[in-house]
Image (cartoon, rainbow, N blue to C red; front, side, top):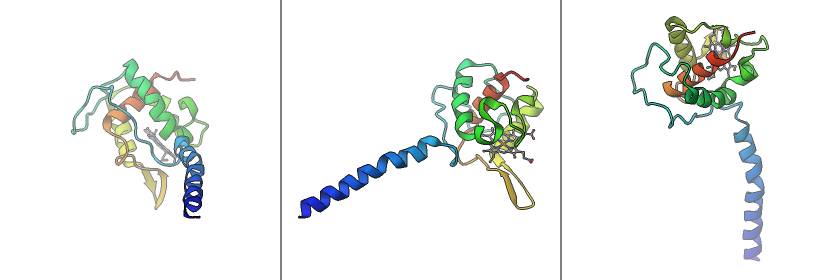
Length: 141
Ligand code: HEC
């Protein structure tokens, strides 16, 4: 009797698992951490310029970081559907680099409405520069 109940409980738990991991794998609601272990560490102080520009490994890391965190608003493959700014349109220079990093860390809110969530708790500057390297690498129309 007790064994049967334990078995049932375990079966229910296991049955629930695939559904749970699906929600996580989908990755388009909660900000998703990005594995930056293959990139050169940058330390705590925020840089003013993208240190990885053009680096193929940073672009690779940024491709999945972008897909998991940014694509649902800024568009698949960085092609905006018009709902949010097209990040490919930001020129590759220091001024835009600083702006990109700061908007991504802080997010965007106006009059109490959140247009974009802040990523400072989820993404390191390594991850954000990798995402920046990815969006810079995408051809403009
Ligand atoms: C919930 C939707 C949403 C998500 C997710 C999102 N953004 Fe945004 N983002 C926006 C919107 C909307 C704006 C424009 C905000 C405004 O009008 O002030 C914006 C603005 C920006 C800007 C400023 C662009 C400009 O030209 O002003 C940058 C840079 C940016 N986002 C980067 C990112 C990155 C990088 C990610 C992923 C890590 C991300 N965003 C995730 C909605 C989003």
